[in-house]
Structures are given as C-alpha cells and as structure tokens.
Amino acid sequence: MFSGKKGGHKGRMRTYTSPEEIDAQMKAEKERKKTEDEEGAAVNDDEQTEDKLAGSGSEDSDDGGSQKRKGVEGLIEIENPNRAAQKSKKVTEIELEGPKQLSRREREEIEKQKAKERYMKMHLAGKTDQAKADLARLAIIRKQREEAARKKEEERKAKEAVQAAAAAAKGLHTLSLK
Image 1 (tube, rainbow, N blue to C red):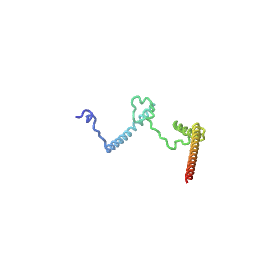
Image 2 (spheres, helix red, strand yellow; image 1 turned 90 degrees about the horizontal axis):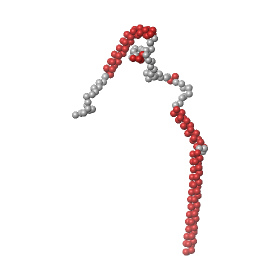
Image 3 (cartoon, rainbow, N blue to C red; image 1 turned 60 degrees about the vertical axis):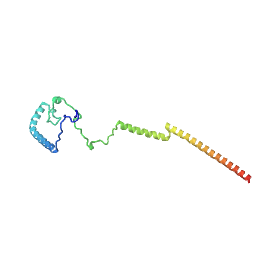
Image 4 (cartoon, rainbow, N blue to C red; image 1 turned 135 degrees about the vertical axis):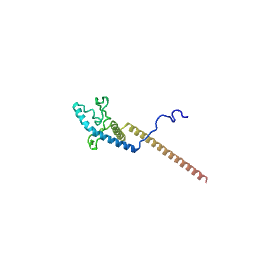
C-alpha cells in the first residue's frame, strides 16, 4: 500500500530517559570520579616527578592533567582562541576615564549630524545657493500676488463706476418720464 517514504522500516523508536535515571547516572559518575581522583593522586605524584625530570610537564596541562593527548597533540602546542574560556571583565576593571574609541559608523554618523547642523545654520542665514534661490522665488511670487491684487482692485473700482453710471442714467430716465 505505501511505497517507500510513508511508514518505512528505517529508524528506530526513540526512547527518553526519565529524570530519575539521569540523577542516578550523575551520582554514579561523581562517585566514580571521586574514586579515580583518590586512586590517581598517589599515581600522579609519581608521574609528575618523572615528568618534571623529563621536562614534558606541559603535555597534560590543557584538560586538567588527567587526559592523555592523542596523536601529535602532545608534540604541537595549539593556541585555539575558541578553546580557551573567555575571561569576563569586572565592572571595576573597565576604564571609564580613558578616551572612548568610536567605531567608524559612529564617527560617520556624528560627522553627518554636524554637517547637517552647519548647513541648516547657513541656510537660515541665507548664505546657501538653495536659500538664495528660495528667496528669489519668494520675491517673484510676492510681486505676482501684489500685481494680481492691484488688478483685482482696479477691476472692482471699474465695475463700481460702471454700476454707478448705470444707476445715474436709470435715475435720469425715470425722472424725465414723470
């Protein structure tokens, strides 16, 4: 019925350990390490004196001294920055008085803000090309509006004069009929 991928035969059913089993394993491992340390202390004293005489005491210093290095690891000194634990600095060790080194992006951002402020000061003073062009454009617009207002006023006065003349003519015409 199923072909290949669905309900296949590969893989095993996963089994999970209970917390009680994990605790038991941890206790057994601690006890085993304690017994090894007690037994190994007497043996290590003898080995360490021999190593000091031979001058090869730096081989086992990497992982606590109990593990033997495999292959050429004992012959080559490896300084892997990822292997060594990172040392965290305390708050008291951090230098607050020293000059703060800014990153390139932070410096560029500060310079950009200062340049923008300088430009805005010059722009408000009317010293930039854009400000001069804006002021010239505003002057032209003011003149056009003044001329438009003047023409409107003249047209209004002319219209009033025509209406007054028409009213006067109408008034004479009505008086003559009486």
